[in-house]
Image 1: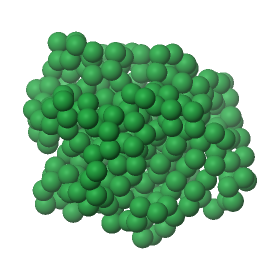
Image 2: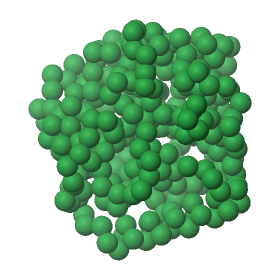
Image 3: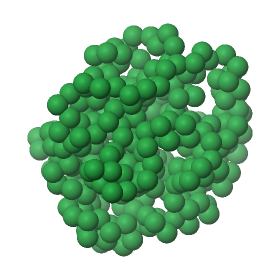
Image 4: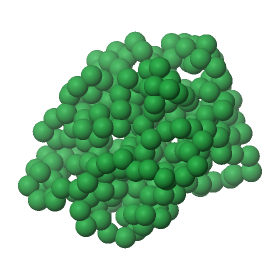
Length: 325
């Protein structure tokens, strides 16, 4: 996936992003975005929204995209850029939405034991949305992915641990390690402080979430701004430790690539494919990295740096000709 030297690869990916963005605007027919009701028992009391491109083929991939605190499904749909690539590359997107009744700031409750766990609360509601999408949109069960920002990133990590048999890959944007906290007080500690756990201890938290599961494990992208004061950059290091340990990999990257103001560290599996990727965005505060004109649009917590959606989708193999995990 990364055969080019750093400079040439940066140019190639930048050019590809611009070409894709231009063709998406010019050629892709508009799909439909709206709320879905009756998707399951919904023990977490969440709302489901989805974006389905026009003429979605059968067995297309499915992406679940989780908004951050104070945001909504509609907000994430409008700014994140996922609908653009859904149109261009042919996949459906589910946008779960938190309610103020569950959380006053509309944060997904990634730190609450009754909402984080296989078959429990909000995590189970999201799993039910996936099942609905697989049945209704005929999505490919082997190509289901989840991504999220901030608290949505924390829930993304938890979902990858709770349902490694459901999700082939994930992307955690300005988020936190799986099972880092079991209360609001602990969650605050995770946000701001090093938890001083070894990679094995972090990995054990994932393995304990679904005891007896032995793989294959999701492929994980980790995005973090170096100037984030809401979720400390140490969380990206802890996430790296966690998921490389789950994969049985070294915490030393297989390769490192510069993409403009972003450093990408890649950790290959034994077959030489990227299993974990860490993107460190220089100078970026708390938010999702977007790049208007290439993908997404700016707004509160949508910051103009790099098209994280594009690089995440390519990492997962959603681009035509890409290698699926």
